[in-house]
Amino acid sequence: MTNLVVSKRLGDYTVTGNGFLTYNQSRALRGLPTVALSIPAGNPYSPFAQAVTLDRYATAFGPLRQDSDSWTGRLGGNVARDFGTLRTTLIGSYEHGDSLTVTDVGVDASALQSQLNAGSTSFNPFAPLPSSLTMRPENKGRSLTDAAEARLLVRTPLFKMPAGDVTSSFRLSDRGEWINSRTQRFGLTTTTDMSRNTLGGQATISVPVTSRRNNVLPALGDFSLNGNFGYDELSDFGSLTTYGGGANWTPITGGNRNLQPETREVTRLSMNYKPFNQVQLNFTANYSVSRTTNPLQSFPA
Image (cartoon, rainbow, N blue to C red; front, side):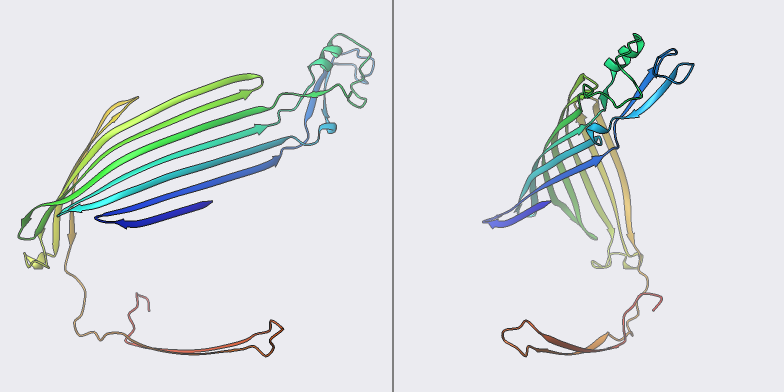
């Protein structure tokens, strides 16, 4: 996995870019292929009086394999700028993924079974399997995925109240997703092509009611109310509306003004000695003493 993040200030704008690339590969062995032959009664090579099913390993082909390769890449970035008390951020990203899986199915024994059904004496099912035996076509599955998104975030105080600023934030977003897959399984090919687009927005507001910092009913602590409303339009579903509200309360509790501050004294001594210039031989010694008075710790101490 490779990841890269770059951030730079350009005048009034703060620009950040990021990208990552991941690659995964797996190789698996799934055992030797098997052949199941139905031997009818009366076969000249069968020691059984009745019809039986004979399971054989086809050792000439080695073990069945399953190989998987996949990679995902993403590029994204955001641009932020403040316009007075208005804080805006524009975010964009694009992601692409590619996955391929190839799986061995086994050997094709239909020709051998046809000989047994016809009563042919040219094939002895108990003898080494003939070299004319072939592998069946592999199962293959490949999928391509893409996603692109753009979001605009805006946050600003609306007006002042005794307990503080009434703040609001807004989001406008548009996201598209696509998937294309092709599967070959036992000779049959299936394709899938789907897409989805989600366009929407959300607005939130927070109203402070009490505040210790601004001395508005400080005995009650910090208390605020908030509400939100969102709307999304899904291309293959329809509209989706969400709304909600809540309250945040931080009571006044704990603390002791008579507690002494923590003090810590740390003494460290270290020595490095290299006796030879031409030989990489180093001696290192370290000594450390730490003393803490009035330590601050969580229970149990």
